Image: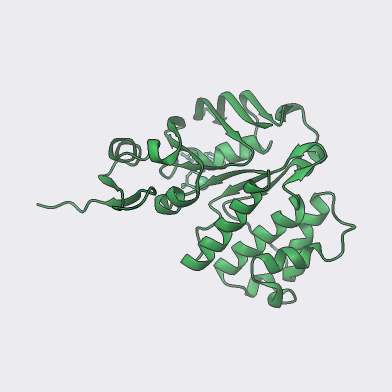
Length: 260
Ligand SMILES: Nc1ncnc2c1ncn2[C@@H]1O[C@H](COP(=O)(O)OP(=O)(O)OP(=O)(O)O)[C@@H](O)[C@H]1O
Ligand SMILES: [Mg+2]
């Protein structure tokens, strides 16, 4: 049971944004997608979630995404988009309950509250979403996704979290809280695909990673293999140095300041 993407191409108008891209991701893993702005990461997430037309093949737990019904997809995966705009003044708890309606759990009392508690915002349940800080709003959106997918494994197999920059607005403690939630989900049998910009957090949490550049996969594998000076510097177009702490196994990445 996995995500298998083969020869995926996506166009916006005449512009080719993903070019015959192939990758796979397994249940039990956090698979991180990294790469520069505009490399196609969000487009990839949207395509694997069934939100964009594409050429090629995307199978999630064996299900052909292009033929899946919306209810099948909603039962299988939850999506945290890179940006979420709400036009109306919803209470926080109402935003989380949108996830219940999307999934199959509307009948479960307390699920939205539990999801909010997991992101540390139960005390804000009856505040207006629009009055929350950017990072708090991002955590509410994650709670909405958690309320939807709930258990990492259903009778039909693993469920999936598709997270587009889930920690981009978060302080360091909440970054780790959210990545711990993702890791728990994977450890308990679900699958996680997460777009990340923080390479150090990726080194710490990702089981596998995929480096994208210009709509293609440049490297993929375990972070220890993929995170090399050459791969990262070429993908990002700047000098990056991958270091290993003396007694550690998790690399850390530093940018090189130009010296002249
Ligand atoms: N709706 C759209 N219409 C036309 N072009 C688009 C659209 N959405 C994205 N693009 C273009 O497709 C390319 C890939 O965009 P995408 O959002 O997938 O990048 P990304 O890797 O997620 O970048 P970031 O790190 O900035 O979020 C970019 O060149 C972008 O300008
Ligand atoms: Mg993006």
